[in-house]
Length: 153
Image 1 (cartoon, rainbow, N blue to C red):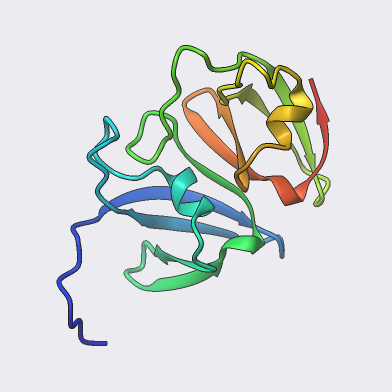
Image 2: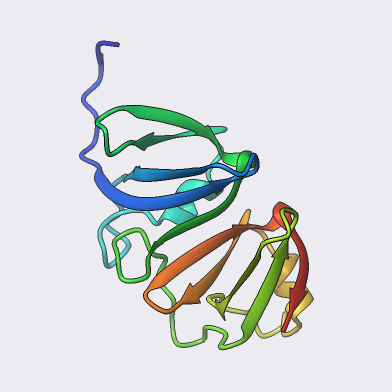
């Protein structure tokens, strides 16, 4: 398809997506510039929380595919990479285990900033956003809220 508009420069971010059908997709998602973030690009969490139903993934083979955002169970990326969301000093240090609708369990440190009036774990899980971010060593795992069956903390 020929472009009629110049596109903004994007930054590739390696991700591993685990899908609702049990498949795994590994490749790059493309992050738009965001001067308001230290990395200078949007976060993968913001990309997944967006209003587009499909997101593009560049494959290692050179091809591309579109994935339905609502079919993503988890998205995993480097915790220190450009696509990782910024976490400030007010972030939670709760260790969680999430049981997913697939039977899989994901454990890690909750990477969420709670508001003073929202001190309960249920407030965090009922807040806006499609994904919950967990830190797992040098990886960041974004877990789709609609795929979480149970939370243990």
